[in-house]
Length: 439
Ligand SMILES: Cc1cc2nc3c(=O)[nH]c(=O)nc-3n(C[C@H](O)[C@H](O)[C@H](O)COP(=O)(O)OP(=O)(O)OC[C@H]3O[C@@H](n4cnc5c(N)ncnc54)[C@H](O)[C@@H]3O)c2cc1C
Image 1: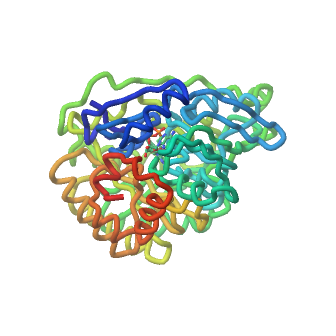
Image 2 (image 1 turned 120 degrees about the vertical axis):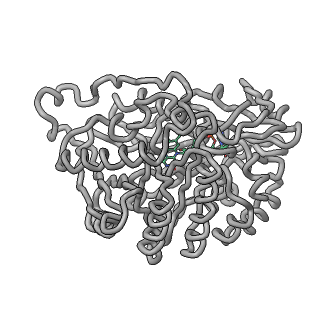
């Protein structure tokens, strides 16, 4: 029985864990299959009942060029291992999601975005080349000029074009393991969006939204900006060893929480307290990279808090012109329903488009977690309608429940992507998600 991070849906799947390319070739010859990284996609994107191929054993780092920052890795290498190995040498991932427990292959397949999308684009913008194993057993090297269609469709293609074997990706040079973080409280949604626009030159920006606030406080947020701290900015005690940051204390959630723990009262209290804490802590401070980029990783297995039924994430992108109205309607609908989300995160997305089927579009992206229940699933269908009406789209790495019609109504690129998959002979790559969405 496997699932994504949301633990919904859980499915009985055949899981293979090959160690070598020859084993992998045999498995690929056997019919429908999908690659799986570390299972941090929320839904069923990395599971196939017939043949799920877990890539974690392809975990070697192969080459590094300190002149350009280009790192060549096998696709099952974890982002955490890249950071552990390269941060002490002065290099950091150019783009990172909110957890370091993802594989590089998974990052390419979802074309992940971070808090710097508005100015630097998504992970794919830093990929120099890929090697992809096709259904015919051939390994193809692709980049923006050679096998360009395969390259464009694999970045953000959710594993549906083949198995990514190796990735060449550029890291960014940094002078320390510290981030200069500025926290700016915003009393409502308009103020939060204005802060994103005013601080568009900040490398990192993200807002946490109190999604149960209503009326004049609708969308009240804490906007957090960040910059990699230069060595000279560090106090004397840190400057001597700028990459040495405090070891993280990780607390594990030992058991599944009872269903219903996250109800209107607990979520409302958490959201209000979180907002108050950030208003109190406004201002600038130095934060270590782990706390800044991966606050949730400090609570291992936090997905168990959502109980036995699991959690679903709703993540959409709205185009810039429609974002204010769309976000207002989404937040009004959520706060009126009382089905609040613990974690509601807003980010500004830039114009950069990397993969042919990548999620980001210029505008804003809102992500919300809900415990699985008939009420939250019905609420999300209402939210789907608002997104479609505002010309938005949905992030497949977070999806576990959308239907094929909604996908098509939200994303005019679907027919082209389906045709490209057929054209490249890649239809054997099928996940439970791609079947549900008729991709
Ligand atoms: C706490 C948390 C925070 C997150 N924050 C963000 C965020 O800020 N931004 C963001 O963009 N995403 C975010 N994500 C989503 C996550 O980054 C993506 O789902 C990522 O793809 C997970 O990588 P994985 O290795 O676990 O892949 P999996 O979940 O195992 O697979 C994800 C997809 O990649 C494909 N895939 C994996 N490996 C390969 C391969 N070798 N070849 C071909 N296809 C492959 C799978 O088929 C599947 O479609 C977050 C997830 C969590 C749990």
